[in-house]
Length: 503
Image 1 (cartoon, rainbow, N blue to C red):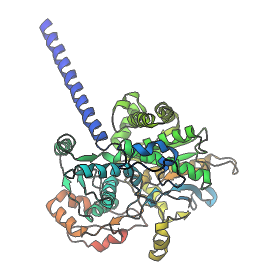
Image 2 (image 1 turned 45 degrees about the vertical axis):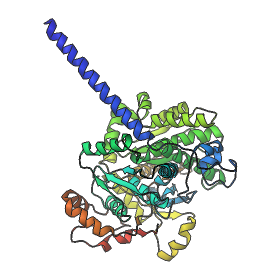
Image 3 (image 1 turned 90 degrees about the vertical axis):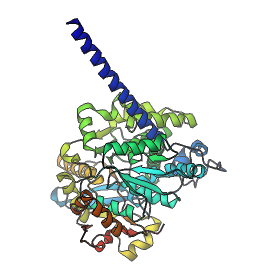
Image 4 (image 1 turned 30 degrees about the horizontal axis):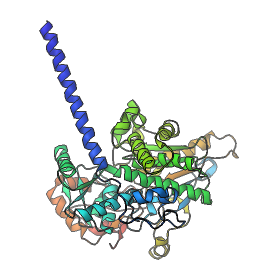
């Protein structure tokens, strides 16, 4: 009997040791992925660190960062703020109103929140490529990944050939198929990895056995987060200028949580710097995690703000720690980590309802119902310079693209909040909350110089799974109708949704 229990104890100890080793290895790999593209100083020191016309919002407010952090201009900033109306949304036929932070208009090549994410990352990659011309630059994402499109498009703009590879298909949807086609139109070298083993083997080879660099999922690393911090500083400047009232609720979709992490840190930084924004004691960031597995873990374990996640890369708490430490090392006079942790615990509302989150990359019933408002939404506000001439000439619709992959889910939350607020107000003159949607999906669906249709037909002929995925991907927007069908379809059925870009 003693021997029996001894062997059970030994077996349990071995299992625990194996688990600890596996967890340690996983954290080691994730840390290497997080740090693959890190901060580097610019090739030449700036002549002045204090200038009113500094194009980077982060450097305008934290000029001490400039000698330590390479940056390349990729977008047309500041992105405008628009007032939006949803006719007949509320009781008595009244419209629901809110504001839009038009991150989708950040670039004529490809907009969305990934532009800010990439401005420091690509600058670092360009300098690395100058020292290591043999290096490859890999970006990992699902078939409909916005990150993959952004990295390929803007990488091309700075002279880098970014290699996308797709370890998985998300759910069929025309928006996802269009992202896949956009990537093909720039003719990058692509890789498929149909198993977890092959995916991680490729990542490990690039991380540890070459000079390659790997963009983390969703661009979530120190540099990506700093880009989003700059976006919050820019918003605070716009509020100070009177472009919109101070915000009560800021809505954002949370995929990799890079943007969410940057928004939280940015708000804490704005308050520390005394900027006249986010001053309401009830101000909150409302977020919908779009990964069903992550949403499930949040419902059961509260992983987003759990203390142990401060040591797990690609989580908000880890981002708070790493960014706060970097800022203090370079000159900031406050530790933002405890401020961000406290803010996240009391001023971030995570909605993880299974019927809203649904499946990764696809609409839910609630998001579809909300996205149907895109065809009646009324928009008022200035356009960026690159749109001033083309919008009138081309008849471009400037209403936001409410994709089921990301932004439609948090938009559904905003619409429901507007209705709930209206139904809960006994006095019509009661002050309504000022709500702002962080519009992360690009308005521009780019089409490069290559023949994406021929290559897509070739790929789907070799992969039945890819063909089935594309053929099941239907359009859900009344504004943006299209169809992709192989092998007997035609490119004309979807190319009207794309914008030709010359890079």
